[in-house]
Image 1 (cartoon, helix red, strand yellow):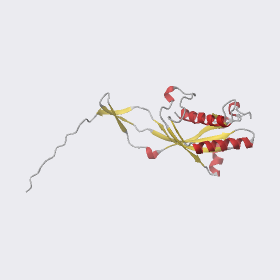
Image 2: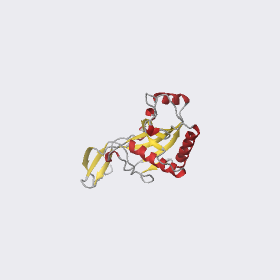
Image 3: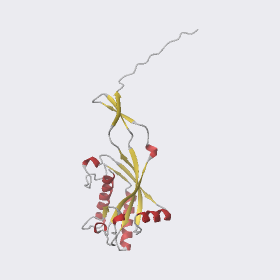
Image 4: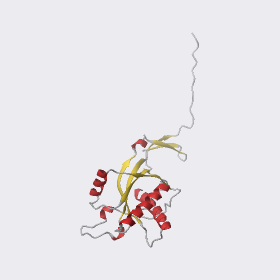
Length: 206
């Protein structure tokens, strides 16, 4: 599901870039920027002269973590209880790998303007039919992503690129909030309450 969500965002970005300046191939690709350069010093051809989209961290949105929730199944007339879904926030790095510095800054400027004009992605305003290295089980049916620019400190930025291999590219970091992950597994069930009976007692005055 995470892969599909990032593939959707990548596809929407490519549509935007293509509308500005047509290209022979996609400008934005989903990949691990840490593998951009091999141990022998050669560049990864699939990521060269691109904007590479990399998931660098994720966190659970604990404020939305409540107790088990229920659903009244009209077919079985039973109340089914599920564990609550997990909402995750994705920290996504966009790195411009072109050797031309001005071109890299142009890519980042276009990307920032794109997310400034469109910071919410859902199954109704995005193309969810994109293909990727996942099966139908891992596809999103319904989703909502809220995208915010995240500004790390110089110390955080230095640590991030040190973790990714040391070589730093012009980049920008975004926080994509509230991706819902869930497995529809019933934890317990019970009969649906169809009606209630209320008894009122009367106590005569003394």
